[in-house]
Length: 142
Image 1: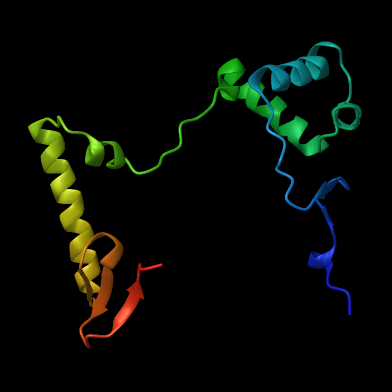
Image 2 (image 1 turned 90 degrees about the horizontal axis):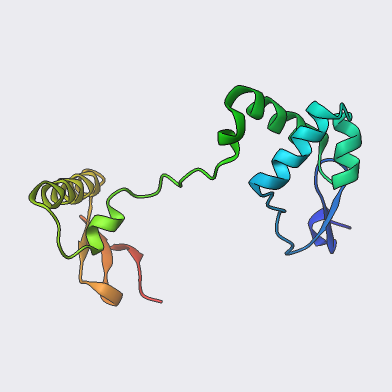
């Protein structure tokens, strides 16, 4: 019995093959602009550009729509939303308002944890999540 995930190569949309462990290609702002301008200014078809650059033609189409809607700014890197309190947690000199916001966020997390019926015992490597029946639900020890 052959399973598709056991092959050394993985098929991605567009018929292109990637080797196992290979990362997706990341396109820079300049590369995207070059491809979009070739399509808009030189009237080269999206499918032809896709074959030329080894990219799915739907991606070129999406970039073109984004460029027409927002201009060059559409290709600027967008910040990751992430945890807005992560920087506050590590900062030593917090303003009073930032310190209180961090405290409120930590308390909201603790309230949600208690509503689910477990709490934290220990700290650092010895931290454990304990339920009301005194049975460990998740140990963070490795």
